[in-house]
Image 1 (cartoon, rainbow, N blue to C red):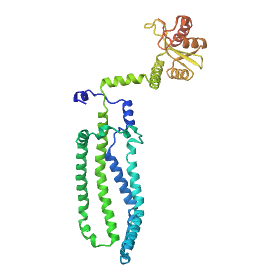
Image 2 (image 1 turned 90 degrees about the vertical axis):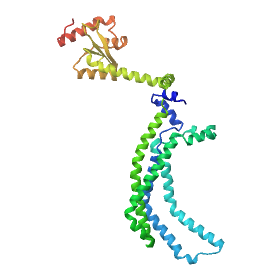
Image 3 (image 1 turned 135 degrees about the vertical axis):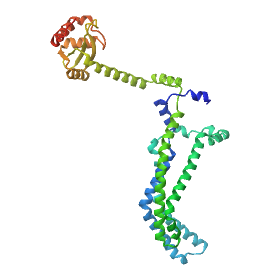
Image 4 (image 1 turned 60 degrees about the vertical axis):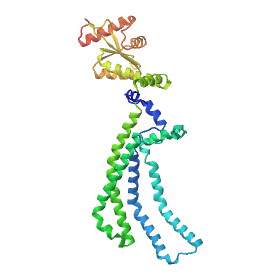
Length: 356
């Protein structure tokens, strides 16, 4: 896409565009978070099971070293012996490697959840286009990732050297120590380096999460025309229509309830219907319906009226008639003038107000 077209994409993506992108497997994913979670899991595993694991390896390898003189030298027997040794070591390593695989698979879940993106599985000819492939290799995003990788390697190496430096004297004498002491010290030093690296990578990960989300939103930005067309298409969807209608009704109901305190009187059924009327002689040609409701809404209108010391008048025929004949913000229909005038006159006299 040309730079001119890109410059027109000034609008943030709509919720529909974001949902469509997610269905296609296009989501904001920080590889740094995946890496950090795996390293964190490895550190926990090493701290918890490394002593047991190293103990088993030490015992197994120690036995074979002590019995080295009994190792069969015939080609057929030697192969069987080595296969047995390999299987023994594999069984010891099976649990930690299995847990590592689970960590690798689970690392991405907190960011995106489970996504079944069929689009990602469909073959695309672009993937076999050599020129486009080379362009992808040298794209800005890949260059940024390469740069981040180089910086991370340098920083982790520096952290490793800085962490190991105080223990240089111990490292020098390790080759001459017992197997048990050697494994304990290696375990300790590995955990120290991992902990320092995790602290550094955590800061990088947080920055990368925000960067990836920014890039994701930027890639999905839309032009003003695209936003208009999308909303136009959404309005034709029956589910969207129903949802928009519900939102409009909720907003209208909210505005109506906010208008109840401006009423002079609430005419009730007394329980099934409630109609709130306001009358300003100097401003209105007739009393106006500011709110009306049935059942639950009627109860809410009465409740608000009581809170604001608005007079409630029980007049079932008038309440039912006004509810059926007038909408909110309508003036009272002429056929109800006499009945409403009597109610308004009663309320104004009660409150000491003048009719005009």
